[in-house]
Structure formats: structure tokens, C-alpha cells
Length: 511
Image 1 (tube, helix red, strand yellow):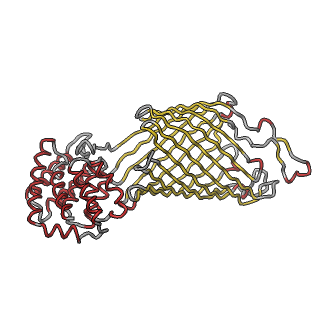
Image 2 (cartoon, helix red, strand yellow):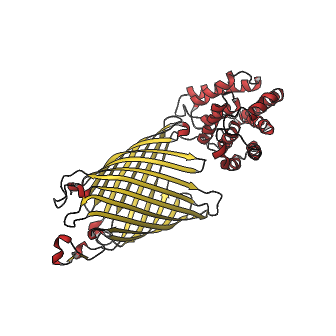
Image 3 (cartoon, rainbow, N blue to C red):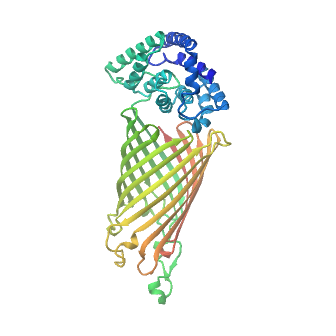
């Protein structure tokens, strides 16, 4: 680890003066700090070597790991942060918590334009080694890049006031603090925002707005959700033989056009807290049987907060209205909480809890409350052929009817209450920079609490769904997405059997 320490010192010497300075001042500060730190390194070799080999309260790096860290440090020094980050990511699962690894990893992430990722690693390094002044200075740069000038000032002041810091580096930190004071007190819309540190880590606006507009055209084999069979045997009337379902209730086929859009707003309150609001809507007219045309409008709004290495927690209020023809069919409102975290810098994991109130203005007997727990695991394999991305989501929950009577007045609402269990998996592969293929498969099981009226059995539904398609990226903002979806609902109450094919082509513009 000896060479790693010297590389770290030289690397930090180059980068300490980068934040909030003009291009000319950056060069001057780099020379001053580098010279000062190199001189300190020569006079304190025993202390630094001891830190590198014994002070690590985290995992110990093997000789092979040390060689990789050294190589990555040299890449960062050569301004190849993205390459260095890719080299270090496979080690993150084992070495996160080793201060030397965390320092080089944080410097690489910052150089690659990921200041939040850098801040997390650098905080680990400081937590393990509180007198790691180089890591603290890099943390100051990362916070400045994210717009947290007060936090950056705090870290730079800590380095400036620490004992043992070379005079040249101490003076540079003082100039950093002065520049931050000027930025924090400057009037106007830029007040409280960081000047970009360098091109690789641009300033992020405190409020970001994005969205999309999508046009689709396609064909649906069951626009009215009709049953799969034209005849039906009802056990209560079994002696009368099978009944015939009226033609008007059987599946109806139609082409469709859809106009959809979404708007996302994120306002960064501080380094760890953000407010968000998402709104979506679509209009789905049919070329035939237009009485079954639909429209949807809804959204969510809430707060998300990062709690260090614990991950990001969010809570949101949800609302949606679904219209069929000219009438509101269903309203939804509720609350949702979510936790998200990335492990080993590769696996994205999430856990969500939600409560939704479902109200049907034209059929209040169906009003219900749905409680759901969902877990998701996802990963993109960057080094594998076609860079596949996989995801798996598992849902469990309960929908409880609010009414005391069924549609036929026979089950006191229990026949509308059910327990659900579902799983969904997805795979996405990149065949070319402009071509992505995707496939999804899902299964959901509904088990009702009581016999369905006239059928003398607890209703049980199994829902299967498969979807696949391609995405052609015309440019950075426009994509064409043809897809085919098949769903099959199988129920022990024949009335609810259903099959459906939907094929469509969607043209999306994002902004």
C-alpha cells in the first residue's frame, strides 16, 4: 500500500484547489498544494504507511486489491475518472469501508461526474479515519458540485483548521472558504448554488423538470373486457343447463389511438432532501365501439430523503381518476412509502408499502381498500454481452371490500375481498446504441374470502401476462417502441375468464 499513499497524496495535491476557482487559479492552487503535500509526505512516511496498512478499520485489501486501487488512483490522476470507477466497482462489495479504497473510489466518482456517489464513499473514509484530510477536502468538492455550499465550506474549514496540514494547503483552504462565503452571500438567483467544479461534474439545478409526450396506435382484441367463453354454467341453475352470454357482453375488437404525457418535477431542498411531483394522463379513443374509450389522469407528490448508507426513503400521496366513455368509472387515492438502496454499486433494491382507496361512483358496492407490500431487485450487467438489465418484483397484499353486501346481496362483501400474490420479471438487452429489446412476464393470484353468489365456491383468479418489444432510439429525445402484450385471466368462476391481445407502436418524445 506504500505506493498507493504516495499516489493519493499527489492526487489530492492536484485536486484540493479545484472547487470554486477560475481556470487560472485552479492551475496555481494545484501547484501550491501538490508541492506542500509532497513535502509533507517525505517528512511523515512512517505515519502515512501506518495509516495505509493498519488504521483501516474496514476490510483489508489484498495485494491484488492494492494493485487495482493503485492503478485506479493513477487513472484518476490522469483525469480518467470514469475508467477508474469502472475498475473499482467490482471491489466495492468487499472493500467499502476501507478508507484508502473509499478515498480513491470517491475521487473517481467525482471526476466521473457523480458527486452524490462520491460523497457517500468519502464520508465512509472520514468515518473510519477522522484525520483523513485529503478525503475531507474531496468531500468539500463533492458537496460544492451538488450545490451544498454550506456543507462544502464546513469541510474546507475543518481541513484548514486541522493540525499538521502544510502551510500551502492551509492557505488554499482559506481561499476556498473565502470564495464560498462570497458565493453564499451573493444576491440573485444564483445565491446558494455552486459554481461548476469542472466539465465532468456540472452544477445541478435545484429544480428540475422533465417529462414526455407519447403517441400510440394499435389494436386491441378485447376492449370491453368480455369473458372468454360464450356460454356459462351457473351451479345454482345447473338443472337448466348452460346459459348463453349476450353478444353485447362478448369481447369486442377495435383499433385505437392513444395520446399520453407525463411531467416530473424535483426540487432539491438540501444535500439529502428533495420534494417531487409526478403527473400522468392519457386519452384512449377507439376506431370502433367508442363507447368503451378510456381516459386516465393522476399523479403523486411527496418527499424523498437520503439517510447516508441506509438508502433513500420517500413518502407520497397518490391520486388517479379513470374514465370509461363519458363517466368516471373509478377514483383512487392513497399513500405510499418506499425505500431504495444500491448494494455493491450494482444491485438496486427497493421495498414499497402502499394503501389505496378505490371508489366506484357508479357501483359503490365495489368500493375497497387495498394494502400492498412490494419488493424489487434489479441489476444491469455492464460487462456482459448486450449489457442485459434484469428486474424482479414480488407483490403481496389484501383488498378489503367496504360494503356489507355483494352485488347479489349474498356474501356480505366477503366475496369481493381477496388476498393477492404476484411476481413480475423483466429483461432488457442492448443490441446497438440505437436498439434495445425487452420482454416482461407476470403472474398474479387472487384468492377471495367467501363463496361467490350462486357458484358455491371461493372465487380464485390467476392472471398471466407476457409482453415483448423493441425500442428504436431515433435521437436522444425521440424513440419508437413497437410492442405486443398478451394477458390471460383464468378463474374458477367462468364469468371472469378473459383473454386479450394488444399490439401497438408508440412514438415518444422526452424533454
